[in-house]
Length: 380
Ligand SMILES: [Zn+2]
Image (cartoon, rainbow, N blue to C red; front, top):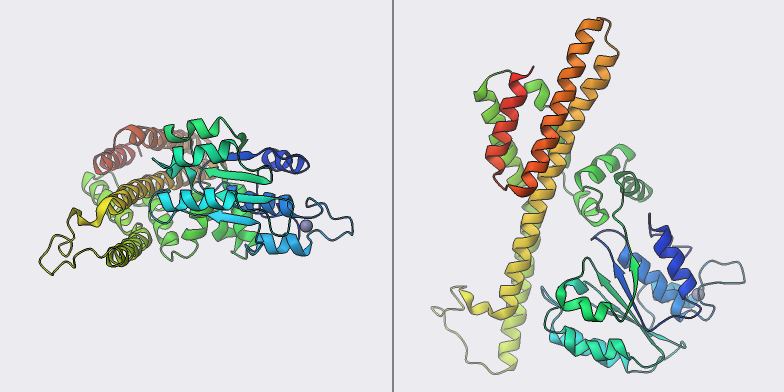
């Protein structure tokens, strides 16, 4: 990256605020905004500017200095990133943050502590509160959170809040295209990710994205006034929904394996009695401990969110397919026919959008899709 904040897309207000803040920073900033909105990238640049001898403003015409480049690469000793080790911010991460905050800066005039995923803070909030409230004068906290859970409200009230808004689909597509993804595919991925940059980036490696999009897009052409066809398409869509979770399922499995391994090592260090094969642990019951229960919770939420995102993206593609028909009917030669077609397409868009709204409150996906497709078949 040649310039600070060059990789932060679509957040001009946040970036302007951070650039102004570098001259006289307060002791804590809360970056608040949805996942994939650029908080992490902004925190990298802000931290680099805070520890830069020139405050990120380089007089010699070069846009980053040696200190900035090391900070951006995560190799500056005065920028400390605290990541959660499991599903939540655990005690050890909180202690690490507190300890780092009290170590004097080595090279720069300041020490920057970046706390990631802080919406996942739980009972560790109080342990951190005192340090975040009154850190040593050289320390600046940068706290990143997707949303504000009750546990974070007190800490948040001690921070300057920097808001990050959700990105538009075009903005996400631009970022992907700039990163070398073919522009057509970039737009498809951005749409499928509903404007979440992190999700779009992970979809970029999913070879089935196009096939799923085609399945949704081809629905209007496949419907034939028969309820049997409508029901079988609905079944297909649900199967696609299941298979879209495969990359997530693989990641979850890896996380569980890693945590189980970490638990095993920890229990060896603590000298806990070794469990034998038939014990609760070996059977994978609730013996994984609180960390495993938290991981289960988070994975379940992620799976639900992925499914909802995927379904919403599919319905958006379907509405888009009817909109394309609407545009095509406008160019038809027979005016009467064109009017009927366009009314048809417009009604269909309305039905699809209503179904998407209904699904927000009613998780009966298969029934909702069956009903939608039956309605769409009979209004041709
Ligand atoms: Zn610099």
